[in-house]
Length: 284
Image (cartoon, rainbow, N blue to C red; front, side):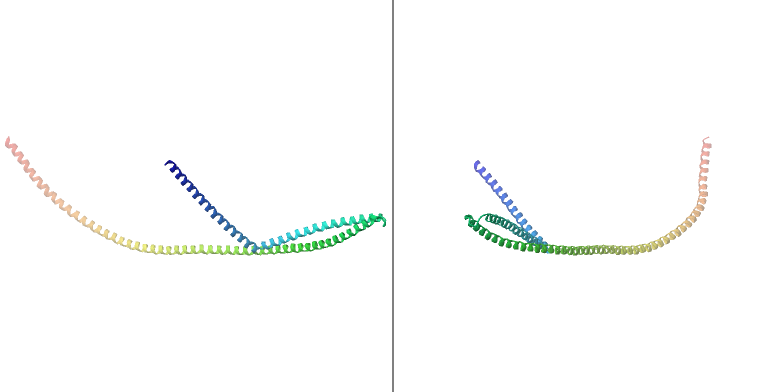
Protein backbone atom coordinates (compact mmCIF):
# COMPACT_ATOMS: atom_id res chain seq x y z
CA UNK A 1 0.00 0.00 0.00
CA UNK A 2 2.79 2.41 0.93
CA UNK A 3 4.67 1.56 -2.22
CA UNK A 4 1.56 2.26 -4.28
CA UNK A 5 1.10 5.62 -2.57
CA UNK A 6 4.75 6.50 -3.17
CA UNK A 7 4.41 5.44 -6.78
CA UNK A 8 1.27 7.57 -7.20
CA UNK A 9 2.93 10.60 -5.57
CA UNK A 10 6.01 10.24 -7.75
CA UNK A 11 3.77 9.85 -10.80
CA UNK A 12 1.84 13.00 -9.88
CA UNK A 13 5.12 14.85 -9.34
CA UNK A 14 6.46 13.72 -12.70
CA UNK A 15 3.20 14.73 -14.42
CA UNK A 16 3.34 18.12 -12.73
CA UNK A 17 6.96 18.61 -13.76
CA UNK A 18 6.21 17.53 -17.31
CA UNK A 19 3.28 19.95 -17.50
CA UNK A 20 5.48 22.76 -16.18
CA UNK A 21 8.17 21.90 -18.71
CA UNK A 22 5.57 21.82 -21.48
CA UNK A 23 4.21 25.21 -20.43
CA UNK A 24 7.74 26.62 -20.32
CA UNK A 25 8.48 25.19 -23.76
CA UNK A 26 5.26 26.68 -25.13
CA UNK A 27 6.09 30.06 -23.59
CA UNK A 28 9.62 29.94 -25.03
CA UNK A 29 8.21 28.98 -28.43
CA UNK A 30 5.75 31.85 -28.34
CA UNK A 31 8.53 34.22 -27.30
CA UNK A 32 10.73 32.93 -30.13
CA UNK A 33 7.94 33.40 -32.65
CA UNK A 34 7.29 36.90 -31.36
CA UNK A 35 11.00 37.71 -31.55
CA UNK A 36 11.17 36.36 -35.09
CA UNK A 37 8.14 38.41 -36.13
CA UNK A 38 9.57 41.52 -34.51
CA UNK A 39 12.93 40.90 -36.19
CA UNK A 40 11.28 40.45 -39.58
CA UNK A 41 9.21 43.61 -39.11
CA UNK A 42 12.31 45.52 -38.00
CA UNK A 43 14.25 44.35 -41.05
CA UNK A 44 11.34 45.32 -43.30
CA UNK A 45 11.17 48.80 -41.80
CA UNK A 46 14.95 49.16 -42.02
CA UNK A 47 14.85 48.06 -45.66
CA UNK A 48 12.12 50.59 -46.44
CA UNK A 49 14.11 53.31 -44.67
CA UNK A 50 17.29 52.37 -46.53
CA UNK A 51 15.46 52.38 -49.85
CA UNK A 52 13.94 55.76 -49.05
CA UNK A 53 17.24 57.32 -48.02
CA UNK A 54 19.26 55.50 -50.69
CA UNK A 55 21.54 53.54 -48.38
CA UNK A 56 20.79 50.25 -50.16
CA UNK A 57 21.98 51.65 -53.49
CA UNK A 58 25.11 52.95 -51.81
CA UNK A 59 25.76 49.54 -50.25
CA UNK A 60 25.37 47.89 -53.65
CA UNK A 61 27.70 50.48 -55.19
CA UNK A 62 30.24 49.96 -52.40
CA UNK A 63 30.04 46.19 -52.88
CA UNK A 64 30.64 46.72 -56.60
CA UNK A 65 33.65 48.92 -55.77
CA UNK A 66 35.02 46.28 -53.41
CA UNK A 67 34.55 43.55 -56.03
CA UNK A 68 36.22 45.68 -58.69
CA UNK A 69 39.08 46.48 -56.32
CA UNK A 70 39.54 42.80 -55.46
CA UNK A 71 39.54 41.82 -59.15
CA UNK A 72 41.93 44.65 -59.94
CA UNK A 73 44.33 43.57 -57.21
CA UNK A 74 44.16 39.94 -58.39
CA UNK A 75 44.87 41.01 -61.98
CA UNK A 76 47.69 43.24 -60.76
CA UNK A 77 49.25 40.36 -58.82
CA UNK A 78 48.93 38.06 -61.84
CA UNK A 79 50.52 40.70 -64.05
CA UNK A 80 53.37 41.12 -61.58
CA UNK A 81 53.93 37.36 -61.44
CA UNK A 82 54.01 37.22 -65.24
CA UNK A 83 56.35 40.17 -65.24
CA UNK A 84 58.67 38.33 -62.86
CA UNK A 85 58.46 35.19 -65.02
CA UNK A 86 59.13 37.26 -68.15
CA UNK A 87 62.13 38.97 -66.55
CA UNK A 88 63.42 35.59 -65.40
CA UNK A 89 62.99 34.12 -68.90
CA UNK A 90 64.70 37.14 -70.48
CA UNK A 91 67.55 36.84 -67.99
CA UNK A 92 67.93 33.14 -68.84
CA UNK A 93 67.86 34.03 -72.51
CA UNK A 94 70.59 36.64 -72.05
CA UNK A 95 72.73 34.20 -70.09
CA UNK A 96 72.19 31.55 -72.74
CA UNK A 97 73.13 33.94 -75.53
CA UNK A 98 76.25 34.99 -73.67
CA UNK A 99 77.19 31.34 -73.31
CA UNK A 100 76.46 30.75 -77.02
CA UNK A 101 78.61 33.72 -77.94
CA UNK A 102 81.49 32.19 -76.01
CA UNK A 103 81.10 28.84 -77.79
CA UNK A 104 82.11 28.01 -81.33
CA UNK A 105 79.40 27.04 -83.74
CA UNK A 106 81.09 23.72 -84.31
CA UNK A 107 80.80 22.84 -80.64
CA UNK A 108 78.42 19.98 -79.83
CA UNK A 109 76.75 21.99 -77.06
CA UNK A 110 75.90 24.81 -79.44
CA UNK A 111 72.94 22.90 -80.90
CA UNK A 112 71.64 22.13 -77.42
CA UNK A 113 71.98 25.77 -76.42
CA UNK A 114 70.30 26.81 -79.66
CA UNK A 115 67.38 24.47 -78.89
CA UNK A 116 67.14 25.91 -75.38
CA UNK A 117 67.23 29.40 -76.87
CA UNK A 118 64.39 28.49 -79.20
CA UNK A 119 62.29 27.13 -76.34
CA UNK A 120 63.10 30.19 -74.23
CA UNK A 121 62.10 32.46 -77.12
CA UNK A 122 58.79 30.60 -77.42
CA UNK A 123 58.30 30.86 -73.66
CA UNK A 124 59.18 34.56 -73.78
CA UNK A 125 56.73 35.16 -76.62
CA UNK A 126 54.02 33.31 -74.74
CA UNK A 127 54.77 35.23 -71.55
CA UNK A 128 54.74 38.51 -73.46
CA UNK A 129 51.34 37.68 -74.94
CA UNK A 130 50.00 36.68 -71.54
CA UNK A 131 51.55 39.79 -70.02
CA UNK A 132 49.84 41.96 -72.60
CA UNK A 133 46.54 40.22 -71.90
CA UNK A 134 46.98 40.61 -68.13
CA UNK A 135 47.99 44.23 -68.60
CA UNK A 136 44.93 44.88 -70.76
CA UNK A 137 42.75 43.08 -68.22
CA UNK A 138 44.31 45.13 -65.40
CA UNK A 139 43.70 48.31 -67.36
CA UNK A 140 40.07 47.34 -67.99
CA UNK A 141 39.57 46.42 -64.33
CA UNK A 142 41.14 49.72 -63.31
CA UNK A 143 38.72 51.57 -65.56
CA UNK A 144 35.86 49.50 -64.13
CA UNK A 145 37.09 50.29 -60.61
CA UNK A 146 37.26 53.99 -61.44
CA UNK A 147 33.75 53.88 -62.92
CA UNK A 148 32.40 51.97 -59.90
CA UNK A 149 34.09 54.44 -57.58
CA UNK A 150 32.66 57.40 -59.48
CA UNK A 151 29.23 55.75 -59.45
CA UNK A 152 29.52 55.16 -55.70
CA UNK A 153 30.58 58.76 -55.13
CA UNK A 154 27.73 60.00 -57.31
CA UNK A 155 25.22 57.87 -55.42
CA UNK A 156 26.69 59.08 -52.14
CA UNK A 157 26.29 62.67 -53.33
CA UNK A 158 22.70 61.94 -54.39
CA UNK A 159 22.05 60.33 -51.01
CA UNK A 160 23.47 63.37 -49.23
CA UNK A 161 21.31 65.68 -51.33
CA UNK A 162 18.27 63.48 -50.80
CA UNK A 163 18.95 63.29 -47.07
CA UNK A 164 19.41 67.05 -46.93
CA UNK A 165 16.14 67.74 -48.72
CA UNK A 166 14.40 65.04 -46.70
CA UNK A 167 15.68 66.57 -43.47
CA UNK A 168 14.60 69.98 -44.71
CA UNK A 169 11.15 68.65 -45.57
CA UNK A 170 10.87 66.85 -42.23
CA UNK A 171 12.00 69.97 -40.37
CA UNK A 172 9.44 72.06 -42.26
CA UNK A 173 6.78 69.44 -41.55
CA UNK A 174 7.71 69.26 -37.86
CA UNK A 175 7.77 73.06 -37.65
CA UNK A 176 4.38 73.24 -39.35
CA UNK A 177 3.00 70.60 -37.01
CA UNK A 178 4.45 72.47 -34.04
CA UNK A 179 2.94 75.75 -35.20
CA UNK A 180 -0.40 74.08 -35.91
CA UNK A 181 -0.41 72.31 -32.54
CA UNK A 182 0.54 75.56 -30.78
CA UNK A 183 -2.23 77.41 -32.65
CA UNK A 184 -4.69 74.64 -31.82
CA UNK A 185 -3.73 74.68 -28.15
CA UNK A 186 -3.95 78.47 -28.10
CA UNK A 187 -7.35 78.33 -29.80
CA UNK A 188 -8.62 75.73 -27.33
CA UNK A 189 -7.21 77.73 -24.41
CA UNK A 190 -8.76 80.96 -25.70
CA UNK A 191 -12.05 79.15 -26.29
CA UNK A 192 -11.98 77.91 -22.72
CA UNK A 193 -11.12 81.40 -21.50
CA UNK A 194 -13.94 82.88 -23.59
CA UNK A 195 -16.31 80.28 -22.24
CA UNK A 196 -15.20 81.05 -18.69
CA UNK A 197 -15.53 84.79 -19.32
CA UNK A 198 -18.98 84.36 -20.83
CA UNK A 199 -19.96 82.20 -17.89
CA UNK A 200 -18.55 84.80 -15.49
CA UNK A 201 -20.34 87.56 -17.39
CA UNK A 202 -23.59 85.64 -17.17
CA UNK A 203 -22.99 85.02 -13.49
CA UNK A 204 -22.16 88.72 -13.01
CA UNK A 205 -25.34 89.73 -14.82
CA UNK A 206 -27.32 87.27 -12.73
CA UNK A 207 -25.70 88.64 -9.58
CA UNK A 208 -26.54 92.17 -10.66
CA UNK A 209 -30.15 91.14 -11.24
CA UNK A 210 -30.23 89.36 -7.89
CA UNK A 211 -28.70 92.38 -6.13
CA UNK A 212 -31.17 94.74 -7.83
CA UNK A 213 -34.03 92.48 -6.82
CA UNK A 214 -32.65 92.28 -3.26
CA UNK A 215 -32.27 96.08 -3.12
CA UNK A 216 -35.85 96.47 -4.35
CA UNK A 217 -37.10 93.96 -1.79
CA UNK A 218 -34.99 95.64 0.90
CA UNK A 219 -36.48 99.02 -0.01
CA UNK A 220 -40.00 97.61 0.20
CA UNK A 221 -39.14 95.92 3.52
CA UNK A 222 -37.67 99.18 4.83
CA UNK A 223 -40.78 101.01 3.74
CA UNK A 224 -42.98 98.46 5.48
CA UNK A 225 -40.78 98.67 8.57
CA UNK A 226 -40.99 102.45 8.61
CA UNK A 227 -44.77 102.28 8.32
CA UNK A 228 -44.90 99.71 11.09
CA UNK A 229 -42.60 101.81 13.27
CA UNK A 230 -44.75 104.91 12.67
CA UNK A 231 -47.84 102.92 13.51
CA UNK A 232 -46.24 101.56 16.66
CA UNK A 233 -45.08 105.03 17.65
CA UNK A 234 -48.59 106.39 17.12
CA UNK A 235 -50.00 103.56 19.15
CA UNK A 236 -47.41 104.13 21.86
CA UNK A 237 -48.21 107.86 22.01
CA UNK A 238 -51.91 107.07 22.12
CA UNK A 239 -51.34 104.52 24.86
CA UNK A 240 -49.11 106.98 26.67
CA UNK A 241 -51.85 109.64 26.61
CA UNK A 242 -54.40 107.11 27.73
CA UNK A 243 -52.10 105.98 30.56
CA UNK A 244 -51.55 109.59 31.62
CA UNK A 245 -55.28 110.21 31.66
CA UNK A 246 -55.85 107.01 33.58
CA UNK A 247 -53.15 107.92 36.06
CA UNK A 248 -54.72 111.33 36.59
CA UNK A 249 -58.15 109.78 37.01
CA UNK A 250 -56.77 107.15 39.38
CA UNK A 251 -54.96 109.80 41.43
CA UNK A 252 -58.25 111.70 41.99
CA UNK A 253 -60.08 108.54 42.94
CA UNK A 254 -57.30 107.57 45.32
CA UNK A 255 -57.53 110.91 47.16
CA UNK A 256 -61.29 110.55 47.69
CA UNK A 257 -60.83 106.94 48.77
CA UNK A 258 -58.14 107.98 51.22
CA UNK A 259 -60.51 110.54 52.90
CA UNK A 260 -63.30 108.01 53.11
CA UNK A 261 -60.87 105.38 54.28
CA UNK A 262 -59.48 107.67 56.95
CA UNK A 263 -62.99 108.44 58.13
CA UNK A 264 -63.94 104.80 58.11
CA UNK A 265 -60.82 103.86 60.05
CA UNK A 266 -60.97 106.82 62.49
CA UNK A 267 -64.56 106.34 63.59
CA UNK A 268 -64.26 102.69 64.57
CA UNK A 269 -61.01 103.41 66.32
CA UNK A 270 -62.61 106.14 68.39
CA UNK A 271 -65.54 103.93 69.12
CA UNK A 272 -63.27 101.07 70.13
CA UNK A 273 -61.24 103.42 72.30
CA UNK A 274 -64.34 104.77 73.98
CA UNK A 275 -65.53 101.24 74.57
CA UNK A 276 -62.25 100.25 76.17
CA UNK A 277 -62.23 103.42 78.26
CA UNK A 278 -65.81 102.84 79.38
CA UNK A 279 -65.01 99.24 80.33
CA UNK A 280 -62.06 100.35 82.35
CA UNK A 281 -64.10 103.02 84.10
CA UNK A 282 -66.86 100.54 84.68
CA UNK A 283 -64.50 98.04 86.22
CA UNK A 284 -63.13 100.63 88.53
